[in-house]
Length: 306
Image 1 (cartoon, rainbow, N blue to C red):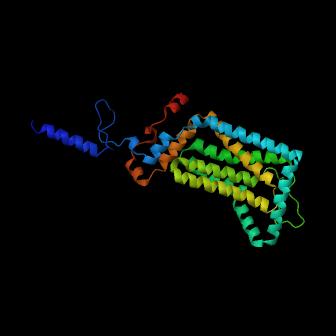
Image 2 (image 1 turned 90 degrees about the horizontal axis):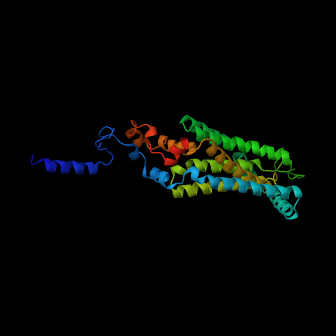
Image 3 (image 1 turned 180 degrees about the vertical axis):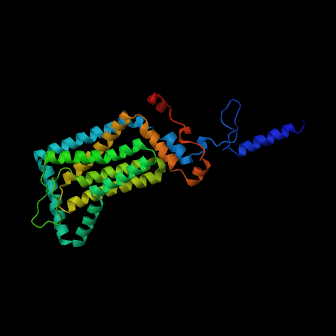
């Protein structure tokens, strides 16, 4: 009897040293010693779940991006159709100067052709297709549909605008490249912007701030480089490239708003599902007995699904 006090004290110390073990208090349905779901997430994952605003909270922001980009695209389209002199002067000045440079610098032209091929719509949409297939395979079906929709909606909107505007491309007696379809907007610029932004959005919850800045910088620079190649090769006016970027922003924001309104909370759940399925191997072994639904969910998901 005299030793019961120290024994209880040692148990308390042991419990403090093993924070991952559930003490199974009275009234709890969990068996003693089971690893709880909240300890299976890394510190970075917990911070991303707690600090990052939910998609529902960001919905007005995405709507503003979509409508703002669409308004700017409409304004640019009006200026292109009206033949606004300052814009026409800018278009011709850029294309004329870059075409002369490309004709006299074959290495520059070859590098531009390589970049424009690698950043073409087929490869860009292929990357999104692979990402969507992987997301579907791990069970993130809504996120997979969102990713595929970015590629498909972007492709459909691009061609609808090209056929509706039917703007001629720059014409040269000695071209360095050739493209048959209408000019406005640039399909290369639009596909590169959509793909870069979508891939950054997919990795955003899994990385820290420096990695987010690095990924965003790479995506922006890649999109700008692809757009520049279209002007340098003499197959697009600068306003075509700008139109492609603006329309890409409208597609990205608009598609996100539609999916979130159609399936409230599903994108956020799939983001957490991806985090769960891609957790480090050590966590996978320790957490093999804990199913995904035991992860805590934000309150707004419970209310919206009801």
